[in-house]
Image 1 (tube, rainbow, N blue to C red):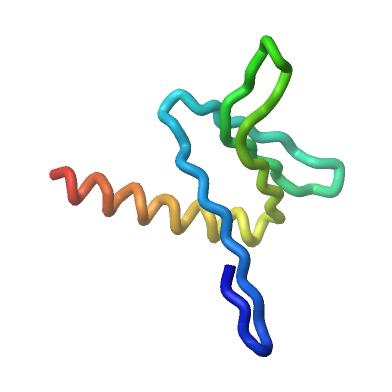
Image 2: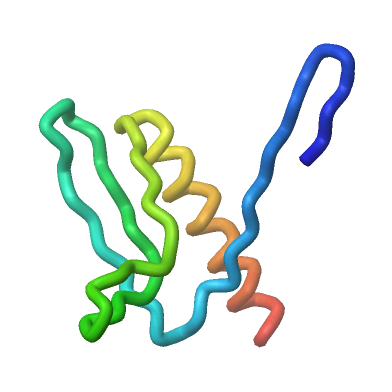
Length: 77
């Protein structure tokens, strides 16, 4: 967390394991809900994060993730 006289930034970091599930759903108010994490069937619990995006922000997220994926693939050769 970063706090100054005029702003506060709160960031949460989550290491996403390769076995994580990724799912999406459309909400009733025309947003996209994306969930990333693991689901325990035995306990019926979800350990992860769910983010809700409107169309404009979703386009930005997809764009930056596409660039990140491209850079990662370039680095690996």
